[in-house]
Length: 389
Image (tube, rainbow, N blue to C red; front, side):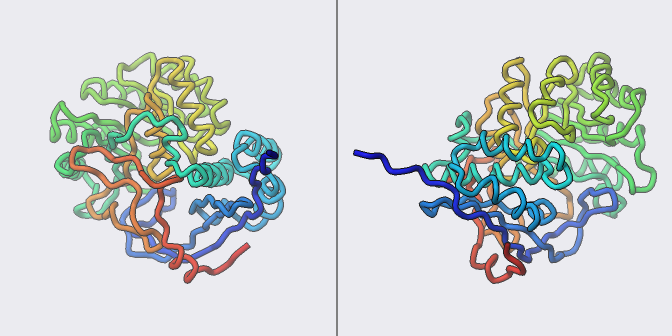
């Protein structure tokens, strides 16, 4: 009997559609509470000749028509959708001299859609295809940056009150993002330390606490904060300095007892993280978006595991949830961003449900649906589509 030919990709398309969000960005790109605002999103569809389709929703800036026409279709059309390594390397090679045309976010969306397609082809959740380490994952509450909103996160006492509320919801870990420009008076070493101290006093010693402070503190400022975190018994210290200076992170990790996490924004996918495991940090960091996809992020998690290190998966959402569920050395799922005046569990109109509901014991159940497990309202998306290519 002659085996039938394997399905290949025969369609790569994007729909731009209108949806809504309940937050707004400041001039430095940080989320804060805001009114319901109409936004444009992009739905990437990759379909094979058997009609199996992988989808992902992302930002239109990273799924532009020129990217689809000049790079995605030429590489993907006719390719075996299960050959993610081959496709990923071809796109990565193209990005070498076209970083503005094919940034890591674009490569990530393609990789996520291919994994979603694979999960649907085999009627299996992606987290199981990736390794299936955990059926339930522990979530920490990742708090928004400080602000000047009354009743928001304007003072150390605000952080303390909100931390208590998060513990009451079930969170066993909380990460603070403190005040950053353009907030008046930011950054401030003293105010960051005061917020951390207020939260520790409010929740007691049994809750894991983490800090993601200002990203461009000097070495001496980072050291001052790090030594305060030592006294407060924080679980980790994240991105206090420019991450392109690996020697600064190596220096800091040697000076403080609190584990130093990194990197978040460094380019180079899993390969750049090889330098970080060699003494630059104590906990490696990777994520589906900032590492160029699920595939390279999983390699980073495996790299950390080979060195006996934890890997902190950066960000929320279906792809990162799958990575945490797949990786035995990824102890936390980052659920956020959270704020006293924002309902994280609000479901955007283009979705039927959120992928990461929180149980009372602080865990998130891994999705049971095939693929990445996201539930999109395709009728809504079609009805609110503004462009197709």
